[in-house]
Length: 125
Image 1: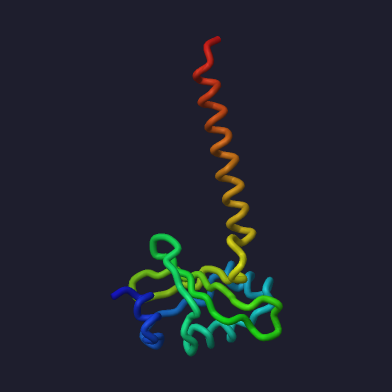
Image 2 (image 1 turned 45 degrees about the vertical axis):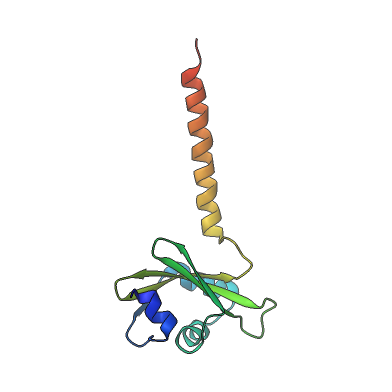
């Protein structure tokens, strides 16, 4: 049983939690959500839904605070050994954060450059 399974079963007290991720804290501020609200959701609420994002990264969806104009928040968690690191938080309808969009843009530019270089190397001068 991995640490995310423990979380889903409600065994939150035996998990080593990390709430100190700078990006996570910035996203809390961006969305106007208190850290305590997220902690309360993780420790006391059953997720509305959850999914494995990739590798050891999982997402859990919870009800958004009542003062928000959206219904759900999505908390991304990195799981390793007996610890869960909170990676980011977003509205559930967001597909990527600004940080992820910048990474995707960077990857896109790299791929375009690779294709251009391949095309140039195949040209006969």
